[in-house]
Length: 171
Ligand code: S3P
Figure 1 (spheres, rainbow, N blue to C red):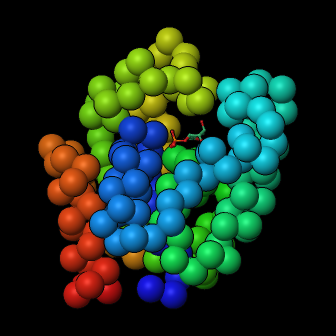
Figure 2 (cartoon, protein in one colour):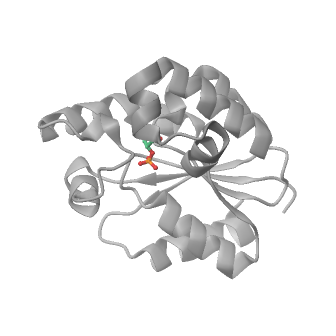
Figure 3 (cartoon, rainbow, N blue to C red):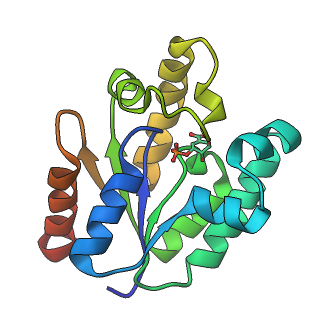
């Protein structure tokens, strides 16, 4: 375990939940990149999007990733859009193991209904927009992933177990 483990995937894929379980089971520190951005910037994700726009948020996200990538044993839950920034993709693929938690838009929306705070890209009235966004991002997730777990119909514990198996024997 000499490199960070990055969890990527769409909003609602379970990155933070699975990351916390992995952190406990593997006794490795957990970092939620959105929280890291909020703590450093002093504002919430919604406010950053609203006042500075998505491009500037992606810069802050890159800077946060650049800070945590030096922690060799960290488990890092990344925001769902991190793969849209080439500089961040470079850091992910060159510094750690990248696990993609895949999910369908329906399942993702069901999981995060009522938890749209901090997810400005989903807080619009149009759920079809989420389906479209996921469609645009799928190949970006696949491109950078070293390992993919289909999370549909699986508990977070089961997803974490699959990742541990991969770390231990499949990697
Ligand atoms: C985003 C996902 C969010 C957060 C921000 C943008 C995205 O993180 O980084 O709202 O573009 O998909 P989660 O994937 O943890 O919800």
